[in-house]
Length: 408
Image 1 (spheres, rainbow, N blue to C red):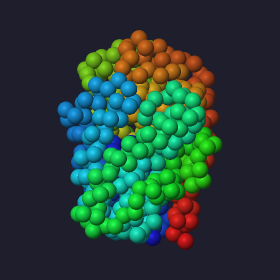
Image 2 (image 1 turned 180 degrees about the vertical axis):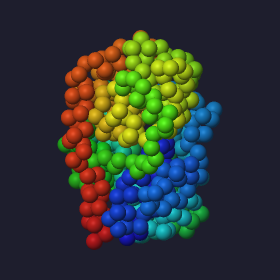
Image 3 (image 1 turned 90 degrees about the vertical axis):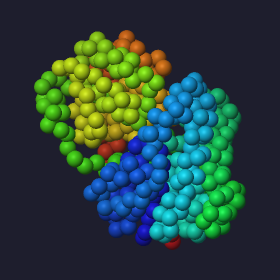
Image 4 (image 1 turned 60 degrees about the vertical axis):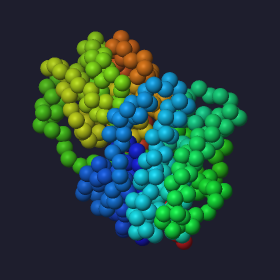
């Protein structure tokens, strides 16, 4: 069948869909990914077609309003600022999403586009399946991941999830209303909403157990590993061969208010912990110099991470999965949104010795966590055992089964 996947956000919101799409292509489907145009290289060689959406999320995060995200001290405050940014972006992307969706017999909608993607599916009278990279639906077992990790109690936890879902629906409300006015699509009311949709979650139940109070139709599929091509550069290979396993440090698509200060703290921490380092510039613009430290741009996580002593990262959903897949210890440095949630899962699983939030990042704190990650063998043992179990899972098969049920 002709499948259109649609997603938006940072690299971590896109990359898992390239691997899932490649798996669906191998199963005989014609797959198109609609995502920001800057990510088109991620599907190269996968067999997945690409339809570009407007906006460059990196440029948005580096804009004045994007930098204001760091002014917020709470998850709720960051969510309010993100909603302000995303509302205009949703309206700008709608035309491209509708155009891409017209090519599909079924839509696979990411959590980042849920209400708008479902409204487009209704307007075109095609079935839709939700694909989430985070547990977005309300549960009494933990609070909404974007609001923090401290449990508020069963009732308040569930309420926080409902508040976030309602906020997301309101964020897309203008774009949904424009479907009839601008594109001639007749959509149903909000009563059907995303709560009535079957949803598969692209992570393992070994990492986040399925909440016991979730209704039927919300399932875990296992990870959708990104489609990655290329190889490590000669410079990187030579650095890896020149000494003990290094520590990788990267903040992925997260930005920071003071890249120079953060870079200095990272370099000092690596040297205090007496480990070599590979520092990824990323969207934060980190930089480091020295014979014992190599600065790199984008690298395939699946090739590099297994060859490191530990990985320091921003705890985004995608990078968290990549570290778990590699089976190495980790030090999460959560920056914003759901990162604290994933960081808490890594410590609960015993693959991380602790969390060093960006706002409390100092060379002393990071060096201490690195020493524990690289000298306490228990973290590596747990990481390797979990990686072995994750390697037996097939995240594509449940999606194929759900598509079969959806289109019978």
